Length: 238
Ligand SMILES: [Fe+2]
Image (tube, rainbow, N blue to C red; front, top):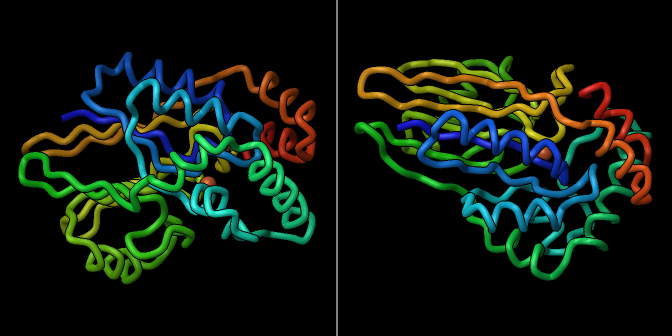
């Protein structure tokens, strides 16, 4: 079974469209999204409509939970005071502009999706099996990976949140961070699409990078009244 994973879209409808087309070109059986649908770019409602229209199931990210439930904080971590200030403006903008329809969709997203393929249990969630705003980077020690694995009864764990893709195999478990479609932070500005092919005796992972009209989104960020800071960050993929 071949599936496509759309990680952290963050209001970037242009990146979502190209990632979707690339997934279809791969002849995948199913496409899932990892949540965090709004914030940092202005097309949260367009992203939600696209996912509904194309019957793309997914899980709830910390940003979706915070926007839909009108929380005071998005649950994100900041590297410096400027980033914190800019992120607050983007979060307030998104809460103000997300429609009731979008908020309802985000509110009703499940924490995780589970299924079994060739006797391998697959679990899809936003950040970790226990908390949707914990940053699970590749350089966490093996104990952390195994602790998270023990929290969930799965052989293949698929998640995002950090916007930096990786795959790791530890003790017969496969850990896949799908990266980010709409706001990569690994220095590569192209949209990141993750393809996972589960076969009886092997699991393949591909991270496909797709160029898109980034400047169109950068202009839309600036015109929307969101901080131009996020257009800059998109251009740097940071
Ligand atoms: Fe995110």
